[in-house]
Amino acid sequence: MTVRRVMGIETEYGISVPGSPTANPMVLSGDVVTTYAASRGIRPAQASWDYADEAPLRDARGFDMGRGAAHASQLTDVDDPTMANVVLTNGARLYVDHAHPEYSSPEVTNPRDAVVWDKAGELVMREAVRRLASVPPGVNLYKNNTDGKGASYGTHENYLMSRRTPFTRIISRLTPFFVVRQVMCGSGRVGIGVESRTPGYQLAQRSDFFETEVGLETTLKRPIINTRDEPHAVADLYRRLHVILGDANHCDVSNLLKLGSTSLVLAMIEDDAFTTDLAVASPVRTLHAVSHDPTLRSTIELVDGRSIRPVELLRRFHELAADYVQDRWGADVDADTTEVMHWWDTVLTALEGDPMDARRWVDWVAKLSVLEGYRDRDALSWGDPRLRAVDIQWSDVRADRGLAHRLAATGRVEVLVPEAEAAVAMDQAPEDTRAWFRGACLRKFPESVVAASWDSVVVEVPGERTLQRIPILEPLRGTRAAVGDLVDGAPDIRSLLASLAAADGRAD
Image (tube, rainbow, N blue to C red; front, side):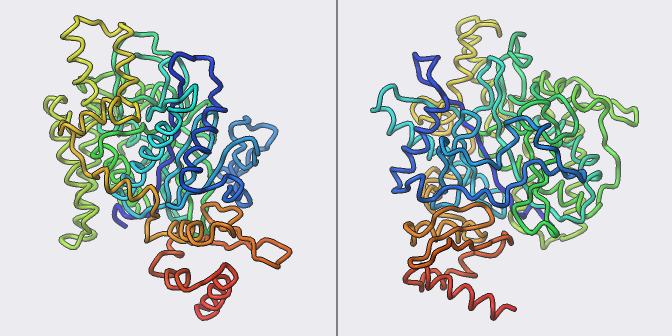
């Protein structure tokens, strides 16, 4: 396997009402979801979430956590009718999660598409902010991961993997990669420590909030490797690796590398292709230390006793990946993998010299260059609250206020996905996964779709006493190529069900 696999990104957005710090974030988040849904003609009661196959307490290590032992935030399989929760025609889920509006992108098959539909989520949130601006008290959203006062919210990645891969191998090979991946994928943060009490600047927004190496939790005792075993697919064939460590990226290159490099490392893990052990000593402590050193000059300790700079360890992963790609595919490697390997090498080469040379591609470097401009102009120390304000403004979703957007608009950061392409993805689903079928049903039969999830669409058939659940457990079925003619040719939901049943019969 190359970088291509089923993947996606879930992003919780920071939310605030300027001038009203006591505003209720749960109510405001609900307003974001319902306002955007209404703008697309979607009623929350019309296309809600199907929780039937949710299993958030199943652990990849071979056991289920008891519900009595679970934190309330882990019980994501319980429908809360007070929380807005809709499925969009682009196959994404838009809902309220832990007092934040969350956009969960549709399933895609390559890193570039992951960037496209993640960027579509930014535009979804921007549109909600625009519409709420005229409704007091208004609201604003931020694509970031901490409020700078001790709260953190996630940007989670999901990768479909082979169930045959031992989870112990995933832990041992992936942990050191995640410890240093932030060097090229971190979003940067003013302040050190969970509550940002120590003045300074660090590579990643999320790193200080991680406390353990392996675990099931996502909002407390956060682990580097999350063990949730909820595949949303055929469980005997697949596992869904749920990655909670990453930052929300604005730079397209960093976002592409986050998904692409991780997918390629996972391919190597699946093929048991690692030829050397790169385990780091004290992974959690090292994760924090790497984030706290924007000079990239400090060394970290490997289990075998070697000392190495984080960027050197990341280069070693790149070299192993390059050898793996060459051995498996040679000149026949696909364009998606070639693109990821190109940017991985380009970014590392810049970071190995003067890290500031990577400011066109890497979020933390681009943000640091802006902050250093303010520091030089106004002689600001890292403890100055004005720098924290700039940090927040960096992630503002509004095109005219968000500093990251303004840098992109003026050509100071590399743009891989034009905004016009992301705008199309606000309404259109990827055509090469089951997300296409989910979105197509919502678009063509809006009055018939009662609920949906990653692996199902629940519909109401006129005259039938019970709802009909259409399972889509195989993520690469339900594509436009596979069922497009059936959907296009069906005048109503009953006809579609009949056509799908006939097609399944022929397949058998």
